[in-house]
Length: 86
Image (cartoon, rainbow, N blue to C red; front, side, top):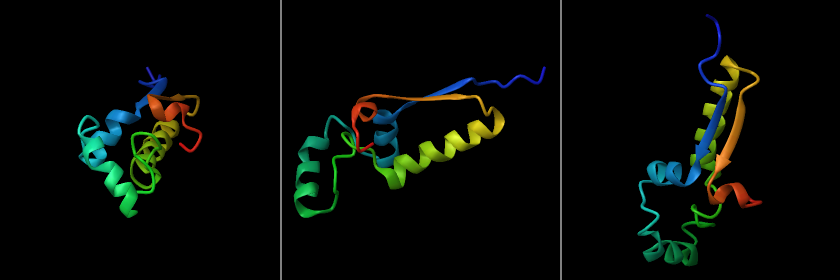
């Protein structure tokens, strides 16, 4: 019928972060503070979105979705939605 299948994308960025980085949010407190101290990570990826990884995935999928349906709504759910750096 020519109508787009999706009218919105809602990104669960905490789950997307876990799957993209291959780390469990539940276990991350055991090593992320050390990674931050050593400069391996600049921010906790569960507090501030990882722009080079997770951010690029969101950006890419949003562009593909908008190419099919330019009026598509986009939203973020989870802690990243409330973080100004994200």
